[in-house]
Amino acid sequence: MKHASDRQLLDLLSSGPPAQGELAGHLDACPECRSRLERFAETWEILGRDEAAAAPADLAGRIMMAAQRQGQLRPAGVLARLWQSAGPIGRVAAAVLAASAAGFALGRFTGTVSSNDGMAARAVTQAEATQAVYLDQICTPSVGLGDGLSISYLPQQEEQEQ
Amino acid sequence: MEALARGETAALGELVRRHQDGALLLARRMLAETDGAEDVVQEAFLRVYRSAGRYRPTGRFSTWLYRILVNLCYDRLRAAKRRPRPLDEQIPAPAGADAPEILHLADVARRVRQAVDALPKRQRTALTLHRYQRLSHAQIAEATGWSISGVESLLVRAYQRLRQELADLE
Image (tube, rainbow over all chains, first blue to last red; front, side, top):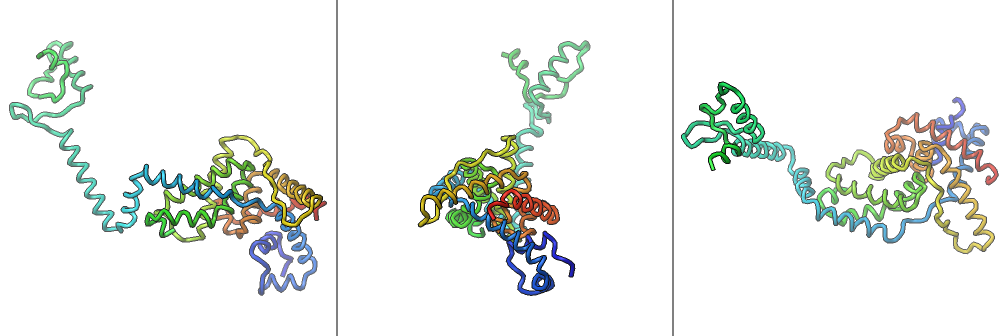
């Protein structure tokens, strides 16, 4: 076997000497590699003279208090744990349910609505409605945005009617 | 970790008690800033708490914790954009040591700490995980996200440099 590399010798410091194998046999037979290992071990030992003090006694308590605060402020944590414990089928079912609910809500609040005379009307945003009325006022002849189309939110129109 | 993932907050206490010393030592070595180190350790455990449900026991818990901690320390060092300042932490004296011996031991500890703090950031991280956390090269690679050969190269350079710096202490 070739001489042991520095990398091999350094790994021995944290993992302990090899009980058997090619490297163990080589170290037994090679004084040069043993000497190199001893020099690394000396540096390892010197570094150990600066073992830091233990954590302050109140650190664990502070962490627990912070965790409890987060737990109380984070109801989503309960949902996350439920999600984790639901299993694949439960997660798919939950996702379908959530998508259905979202779709229903979108349809209910932003979709087609019935106007007073029973015609279907398209809901538009306030900005679109304002823009449409403005265009109708400045265009000659009228672009006819009001013809056959009921706008669900027209603040200017409401003001004029009042 | 399984108990923590089930929402048992008391399990976090057990993890903290078991790993806080090692975590704080690592953060202190990386940041060389005691107060900041405690903040980082606290944040690391809170992240463990928040993401317990996503933990997969493919490796040692400590390696996962150290990975979180190393990333937090790097974030903090980047934010500070400065070299860490030397620690002014008191070196604990061994029981039964007399006054001159205490002074000598404190001086040796200070020299060692200064030499480690003076290492480039990546060498210091690899050395700390190797010497003080006793992780293998593969575990250091896992904790840092670096390649094993990269870790080994950093360690060889760090130990060579420290051996020169601290030669008179041998």
